[in-house]
Length: 83
Image (cartoon, rainbow, N blue to C red; front, side, top):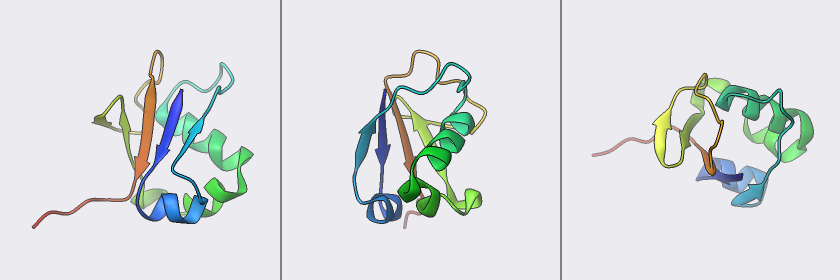
């Protein structure tokens, strides 16, 4: 699956995307986030404050307990405000 990083996360990680094949025990967005933190130093630094991480699966905003089964794309981004 493609994992996309936006805004501050892209800057801290140093890239905008990864192609990831997580192990079978990675079943939710939160599991994927923890997997990325464990396996990539850039992700560990970027995702150090879990309170500011938002996610989308196949371009739909989701919570961290959302399943990634069958997902083509998971995106991580900081909170977004409008005006």
